[in-house]
Length: 419
Picture 1 (cartoon, rainbow, N blue to C red):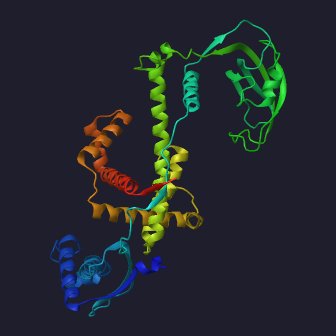
Picture 2: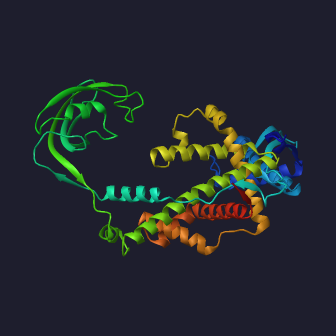
């Protein structure tokens, strides 16, 4: 079994003394023109004095000039594709001697492509039932519902009431909310509210206790028992628009209800098809990863884990965050996410290799289309968005994402589908 260790390399280097002395002379000469010493005009201090006074600075600049260059030349000569930054150890730099050091680093794996076409995957083209269309139409009617005030009377199941809600105890931060709308008997309404509102009259104040479940959505209320005072002000009934041609025309460019139904059916089909194909494509990638054995550099895995963590935090907070400013237990995160990260890295390397072999790439029109989409979403001009994306290095990632998606489509199109 291949491991990350297979990607590790260690090389020993020796920079000849003549190159070291030449670099020392060059650095000393440069310092001589820059530094100011008492009793000497700029650039006129003896080199021997410069060397004795600035020994540490000269040493650092010589290392900075020679060590990276020696590393680059050696890996280029050995045709090694280095991943990440090398770890320089055992640095030996003494007067009158060559510079010696060791570099430990990782290299990109050599991915040998096996079979990737005609893979078998479970997939059935989805169907859309009349019931699903009806449910979607009902949801669309709900979005167009109107809430109509009714004459004062006893509150009934199914009423929507506008009430004043005030907490009397049980909370560190009290609740005092006007114009709160509650559906009496609704699925999202806790039973205690329904029980105490049924039969009540507008402006009739009720006091009661509500015990919230431990897994309640609001952390502020979860598991708490709260004493409330509630006063219904207005009773409303929800009125849905009729499911007819007029409703269809009100929603958009539809001539009648049949056209709307057909559009809804196509929309549901597209959603189900996208979901089914996504599942099939992920299964194909799993098969690819399982059938290709090669090592993965630890650098790639760490980078993938950081991306996964950043994406998860973005999903929760709705914004990008600086991971270095968060108190994260990276050891625990890496333990939990390592298997997923290795799978995703191997998948990316395989897809990239397949794209190379099949000549798959993102076209200019495809990238332009995505930039236009971002510009519309951000309500900005296309040139401004393109300039920002290019400056931030995102334009290249957009092209890479398009290429990856096209490669996954290629795998799906050339797969053998079975129920």
